[in-house]
Image (cartoon, rainbow, N blue to C red; front, side, top):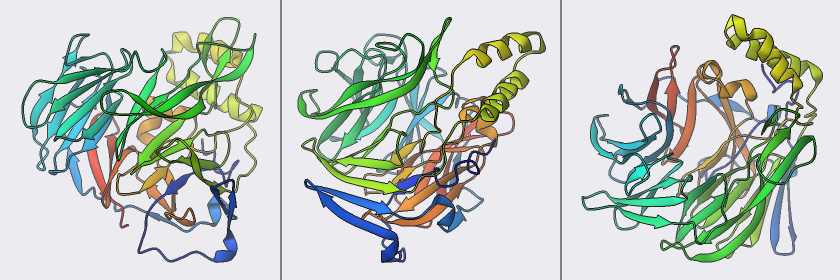
Length: 397
């Protein structure tokens, strides 16, 4: 299903430092200040922005039978890349030739062990941070040898079902990501919130960013889960800035290191109404993915679910520490299925560092971007059989 036609201007956003880009028409952008917050409003729809694709051939590719359920990756300063997987809950380090040269961690609850790998961070002192949200624990591995150090965040942050950690220029951002558990209406679609903090490398709280809505959820007579077409909280960092996209509005909110809101970047939205036809089409897609003897039960289960009233305004947010930020087009709920990942091509709007629109970038089908570094975008690629590999494409920026 292609949701761009029902919502032509609600697709994607990227905030990116692009020195080589041509400045946009000043009449298309309004910049105002309100209580020390810069508000950049772009008066263009998604379909009005020029589009181009990344080159067909990847600049780098890593193939390894061990690559399975990749959840995080991080380019390293020396050209190697760290890849976190939950097929076995470990981190593999690959050299520039794509050869696995080291492995860190394993599945478990002890020191150096993980239940789930959510975030990978390049930390000071030539070390790699691996964040596991289930025990809320950051494990720091020296990249030059030595024993890992474990930093527990349980005592400095509230108990949450899920969380994430980002790197800042000086310290870390702990992001609470609220899910279906917790306060809810008796029946229907709802969205809980959770707090986020700036913390130092010892886990001490330095600033509070406030609370942000997490997963848009649904509670029914027999289930409590993510709502169909529901929005998610997507966050990233660049330098000392914390970037938040809730998916509720066509905007990004950018916070400084003291926790204060400093900039809002907005773009035009369109009709985002979720129709009965959209839900019916998705239910039939899920039925087509189910075994024949489970088709009726699958149809009943998904037909019972209430849908979010509006499509999310965006999906993933990724960034490089040099200043580039991409926010991806909402691809529809079927993209979360294995067959959807293999078929999905993603679109991204590129904004300059001043918040003005520059262009659209299209990434190949089957490729899910996960990290930006210099002039390449890194991610996991799913082939026709669902086999995973790691790819890097040049962005031309």
